[in-house]
Length: 409
Image 1 (spheres, one colour):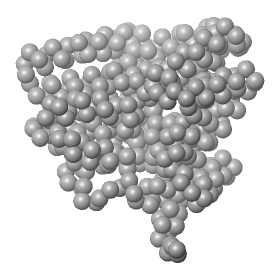
Image 2: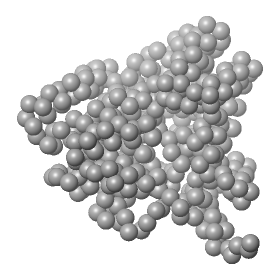
Image 3: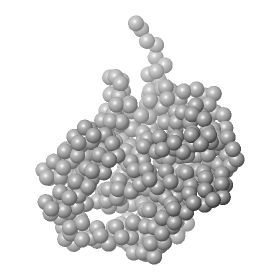
Image 4: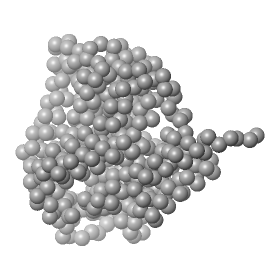
């Protein structure tokens, strides 16, 4: 069903249930970090459900790479908004975020006796499956977004630069450079329909969201300093991290450590224990905030503290995305902007190529068995059209069986 023809989906309860269960399933099975999440989303919503086309999806990915906050979660929120407006975005976020949040809050209550989950065989299998998922995303997006020599060249150069300069700043520079090259040198179609309908998010709502974002960014620290209220200090600290971190994922960890450890809210050993657990759960790494809130020494902590910190760190990225989407729709229909987007999308393919090697490949492929499982998973995803959920289950079982075989030396 095309985006433009979905006149009856807004505020439809069946659509909201569909969005929630689709993202909940991804929240349970999406291992491998934000780049892998982008691959899972594409397979589910572009290839399988056909909620949107590759061009719209790649535009969303390119936009979210520019914004502060967790890029993969923002992509999911945008897909929910495209499907069912603001409520759809909230439902998509809830479905994708709840599984890892619940697991990490539970871990904070004392599940640490399970030991170092990073060495568990089934978890390693899921990391190998993530390699295949990212490879599938690169394969599909490259065919759509880099169909000629010019855009393929942009993608390859972008990948080489990111491999040489692996940082959030390097990623941002590559995306900007891709946009400039596209603007000046690439040609695109002149007549293109908007990706978003005006009724989904109005410009007044967008402006109100941006104003709210700025007011909270400035006002929360002032309110916390004036009142010395611990809850406001928590909200302010986590909101600030969510507002200012670019690159998402692991970039957020040192910033959170600076907020919670020096202040004495949590000791460094507990912080590192939660960091290890966060690597072992699916979904966005930003849900690490839920663990920190639950593990705090002072009230609020437990479930209440976890929810406060979780909402606080995600809220700025939600407000920014709502503030940008309507204007993004206006801009993207212009020829010059579309040419720039064409270059940006090619650069994003380059980012995915670089990420396929590091950190996805380097953290998962350690020997012939891993490589064989990765090839088999790629075959099942691309050529057999198998559901990624089934492939994830297969990878976990396969790795567990291989690890249980006796070794001879």
